[in-house]
Image (cartoon, rainbow, N blue to C red; front, side, top):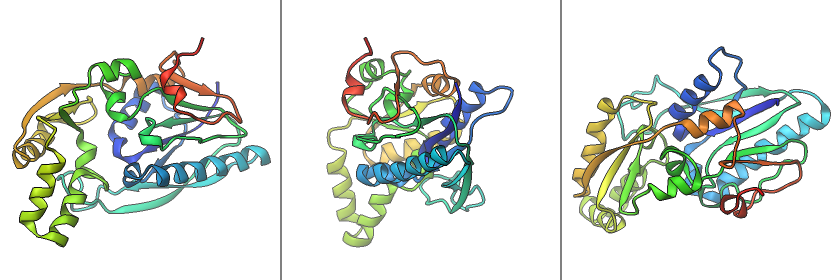
Length: 265
């Protein structure tokens, strides 16, 4: 088994890096191509960005040459990084990916963000989850759904640190409608939720981020809790420990919603 690259969302940077470290304890992990976090809120744009990377990797595979693909990362030098609620500064870089190997997608289905993605030269491998909440709630589509509370709004550190987090829309509403009206809109959006649930994925300090999460709960007049999670499914994805919770598609086979719903016979 050869892995060309991992493509992952910067929203789950901490969890991805922890899973990579565990999957490759002696080093030698494949390159990671980071996708901008705000795209997960617009599935069609996420789909377009992922397809562009996959097509570039297909070009390299056909030419049997390494290719350079764009990657976006946050900068820890940002004044807002690690303080919650800010928009971190970004830097773009090019990542070299070799001509051979599978493409691992560190994403859930993300509202259709993976829909119809296809590589004509490489296998696509991805977890069988609808989104990263199910991914972290102890892995697997059915188990993640079974442990998910529809009245909980789930958060991790990434939701506070990256663009597309829950604060971005609110800030825009304040600018457009004023503080009081923005607060009313936000309360309506969260009317069906009873609590904020901070997922302890093991990839960041819960004690450091608990105050930010509790503040959000207070602002929204919701209760608060910490729920256990893990990066086990990501770790197995990266390590090649694939079972029914990991989908492996051959070249030319597009991703569809049916891959989330059905086990391989």
